[in-house]
Image 1 (cartoon, rainbow, N blue to C red):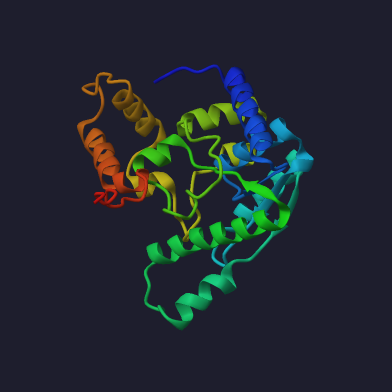
Image 2 (cartoon, one colour; image 1 turned 135 degrees about the vertical axis):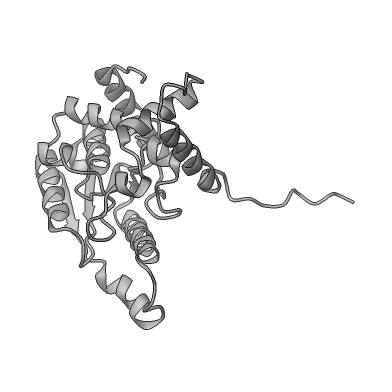
Length: 253
């Protein structure tokens, strides 16, 4: 697995965030704070880059969300000293499914939750003149473990080049709350969900294999089933990582 200098990486990302905010003409960042480690690190980096007064946290629980998610999100915002707002998305999500699609499965419901949160964030970004801060890491991006135009929608992705294991390391270095660092990673879209159960592989093993693929390293030392699983995840989600396809420009007469 690759080795990075956590302190230098934190400084580099903060300079990136600070510079992008200035060049874009905005003065604030707004971020969906889920109680998970990715949004916690994104928010912490934004605070270090631009100041707590220039970061807004938005918590968007659904009625079936685990209560610890909201509790941990509050702990994070208090720890960082940022303003926050709690918006229950249950009425918005339920209005669609109860009225039109009551038989929808949990995956469709989870995807709509993610896209509803995106809509809320972008509307509030207009209200507060704040850029939407992304929370997706490289492990999720490469395997497609995100909702297209949902949690993947952002103005800037400070963690997009970091594997999940890098996110843990930087979070330790920045001294984020232990309740967030130690919790089982989950999108919290339905009860008992976890990232690793959904993907069928631990983040530690996933990141080792992803790095080997990216660096053209030796894959023979890894479990064959895990390697096949990673390649399958990457192949099935390839469409999520390319710009929206369109026909070539028409030929001029």
